[in-house]
Image (cartoon, rainbow, N blue to C red; front, top):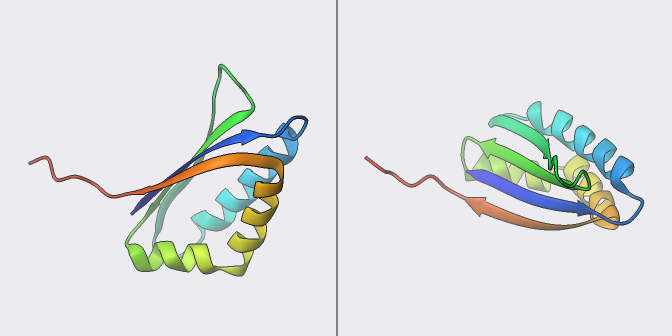
Length: 94
């Protein structure tokens, strides 16, 4: 399962958002079933970030989302940004 989130820092909150995203990525990468947890920044607008997460399955994704550290960090991230999240799965193109 893949999770993609686009986050826009609230005015004056870019540095704090970036710090929080680094923390959540570091923690996410250490969780069982996580293949990658990357943070991207828009070169045209440094206030916009993209989170790119990939999990083995729904169980690994749910474990991440229900973890205490993720809930705490996501609450703080919501305070300093506006964001949209999509949960997607691969399409078999063979």
